Length: 270
Image 1 (cartoon, rainbow, N blue to C red):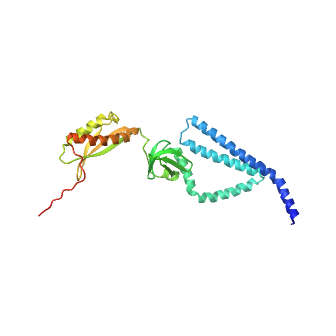
Image 2: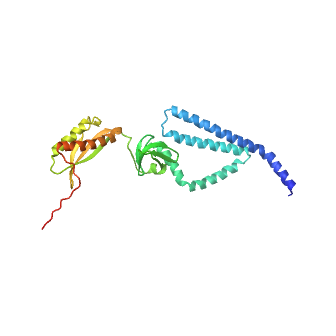
C-alpha cells in the first residue's frame, strides 16, 4: 500500500465515519447538559415533596447513573456499533467487574436494605462501627456521618446493614445516669435529700410518670456511691447531665458533704 492508497483510505474513513463521530460528540455534550438540567429539576421536585430525606441522595445517584448509561448506549448506536455484540461484551465485563468489586456490590445491597428497613434516617444520631455522629447523607455505597466536632465519617453500607448499631434518636425520652460518691462518715440522708432537691429544681427532668431513682449502689474503696437515674427529653440529655455534675460540686460542700478522691490508709506496725 503506497502513500496515495493510505490517503484515500483516510479520506474514505473520514467521509464515512466523520459525520457520525461529530454527531455522536454533539449528542454526548448536549445529553450531559440535559442530564444536569433533569437532575437539578428532579432535586427541586424532591425538595418540595414529602419524600424521606434519606431517599433523596440515593435516588439522585441511581437516576443519574441510569441516564448516563442510556446516553452512552445512544451514542454508541450512532457510531454503528453492533449493540448485540456490545451487550454481550458488557455482560462479560460486568461479571468480571462484579466479582472484582464484590465488596462494592455488598455496600450497594446494604444501602438498599437500609432504605427499606430504615434502622436510621438522615438527622438521627447513631453509634456504629465505633463512631458516633449525626447521619448527614445515605449514599449508594456509603453513609456519611457528622461528628459533634464537625468531622466527616464515611461508613460502608454493608457493615452498617449487617453490624450492630445504637440509634440515640429513635425514642423521644432518654434516661440520664449518674454515679455520685460521698465520703465515708457523711450523712447519707442529707446527700439523698440534696440530690433530690437538685433534680426537683431542674424542670427538664421528667418526673410525672417515672420518679427519679436515688439509691446507694456501692460501698467503694474510697466512697459511698449513689446511683441516680432520671428521664429527660432526648434533646435535653447532655444539658441535664452536665448541669447536674456542676450543681453537685457546688452544693455538696454547702451541705457539709465531701466529694472523695481515691485514697489509701497505710498502717505501720512496729
